[in-house]
Image (tube, rainbow, N blue to C red):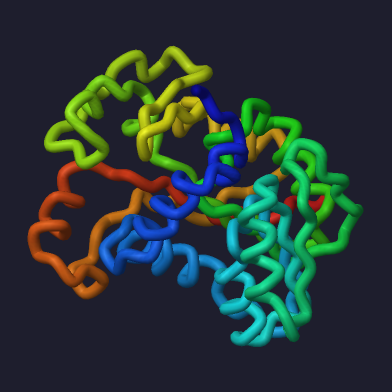
Length: 246
């Protein structure tokens, strides 16, 4: 069976296995992507933040504890939303249970928009980037991560399991839908080049301030073996952007 968007996370077995992987210290989320995201968003004191594909909103809870004024999450999985609302009890945060594509973006409302490992599930990022641009205040920032395009181009190398020993890059410039075998299911993602992300951001009215490919840092890994494995190929792509005015 194929799952699109957040629908896979409504399957109890998938959800449980995903959370177990996500919570590992050496997961790409924690050992690679997380430190970069926190560095690029910088000071969030008194900021209003929108998080697209917020998952269980643990990230939002962290941001509120660091001084964010208000946190808004958008999440398409009912099961994730339940966890998110539990995590935000007593916090100045709100979670909308709806897909990113269906969300209505209020104009000039947020100081920061984030999205972590989500936008490769979205088929039309050009319209989405325009929505994000208009929902940001003047000089607002947009910081997001996606699965690195080198790893979404082809999934033949996953035939022997999720933990790949080698990576095949193929059909890189043939953008579009990809079906990835993941956690005993098939999930639909959308492959696009780094150039595509960059040009779509510029077209929407953003200036790209920084781009990172997730260079592993030894201090973030508990396992030397996993650290060495992650030096072989980039698994994350992160952009930091600011809203252009005029």
